[in-house]
Image (cartoon, rainbow, N blue to C red):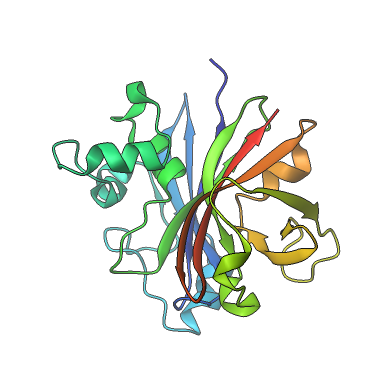
Length: 219
């Protein structure tokens, strides 16, 4: 079976509405296994805003070759939890990969409510690639919650001249710009020959849209 995940990038931001900064990269291959290293440029930028190195990886100059998934895997849900089925269903996790930590980090983003780290996958442009991600920029656009519903199909537009992200992908409902595909996750839109289909997967709202998760499929 062809791999769908190139690398996973560790990103950090100051909080809701803050820009995501890639501060590290997790790579997996047959010769080296799974390794993690910091991205020095991103770390230096993030430190200006209070960033601290990830616990368990204290050396910015080191390439970590052992216990990488053991440490990052603590962020993932345990199979024995009562809500694990909902979690796997929400992120559309393949049943035979529920013990694959690398895959789970990439597909669920390793989100926890206690910090501002996210694990964002750079995907290979495979046909039938499918993943869940989130619309970024909603705190800026402040879209009324009545505008979209779960199941809506959104239009994706490559913003090749975007000053912040060279792989920016804007998302629209009709003619209204909602925001963007998350950083890193957006790269595959630029590298694929397959047509993307973006569907609203889940909505959190309170007068305005708070969080909108989307299902992205390449056909």
